[in-house]
Image (cartoon, rainbow, N blue to C red):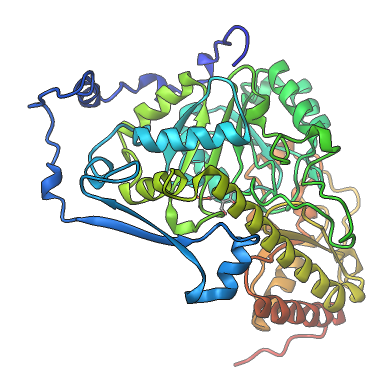
Length: 501
Ligand SMILES: Cc1ncc(COP(=O)(O)O)c(C=O)c1O
């Protein structure tokens, strides 16, 4: 962080304030004070007793022009790259070190590897990495770090509810901020903060947001909005939890203009992008230490990696480590060893990782364009659904023109709750899709669990969306969009259903 560090300790939750660091881990750290310390302190199983001689990872080669396409096309004969770590020797991390206990921050070598990665893409001043089990783990740890009963947190009105719901049992109350294709709307954030009524309880102090390829809407924050939101965070003393699993999947062109010059997601202009050609993260803008950025390898390697990391100020890092030291402890050695060697000198290196994620981005962009091409053919001609064109991520947010349904009703003069039968009709359409063999993700799954008492524009009237993904196979997209088109026709024809006995 540049300038004087800002004291943000008042944001800690009651739980975080009450937590004492794990004192056994403190002693464990002392055993590393100088080389060759004799330790009779810890019950650390000796490495000669680990039943692992060596681990070899055979991974895709990244020296080809388009490594992901080569890897997919070549199947089992595609060129690969082998990395071995044995018990006592390895390019970076031998088995005996990787499989020993370590601190909640993760293995030093792995921490260094992800710190380098963060420096390469975000170059934040004075931030520290804490390894996690992926973004689910990272984000929910941040919620526990910052949320006390009665606290208010802000988030996109449609959000990754699997995580937002996890804050509710801690007594956190959600407050929604409107979003559009450009992501969270700064003016709405400002409006919520400026017009906050003290009767409602303490003012929100945390913003949870997904800046790239937002789940579920697929929207990506423009550079301008990112800057505005960060300035609002400073003005209203908000912390930002930046949940960014789709950061590397920022696309370089719109599908209808293949000749378009690369202009990645969220870019208002080329010059606004980071040196890597990606939209600047909140972390890269963070001068105060008010951003906790959460990264994952689920979308760039595999979800079963269960590995990610949180980048934060040293202050919040220390509290995250205390939480981890007294709960899950550091992530598994398999993932940390794999990642460290993959990014190390005998592996892909950082340049190879960059080549992989660029190629992966191109692969997902092809899939997106394939999906949207099919959508134009199978669904758009019905004139009943609009699809967003995502600039990043894996999701297309489709808006069903539910007002055109013959049984759509609006109750005039109603002041509380839903004023239309939108949700009910959408449930029927969802059922029709299921009956026809298609499962989609309905909007109600993602509605932020905010207090409806304060929702002037009831979200129940805006449930007319389905989230569809292009992450699957071409066959799934072809078949799925055909069924979707057919289901829409049936639903709008409004034929009474034949009840099976
Ligand atoms: C916005 C968002 N956050 C977090 C996650 C969970 O990621 P991980 O697999 O790293 O726990 C997902 C996964 O779909 C996601 O979309």
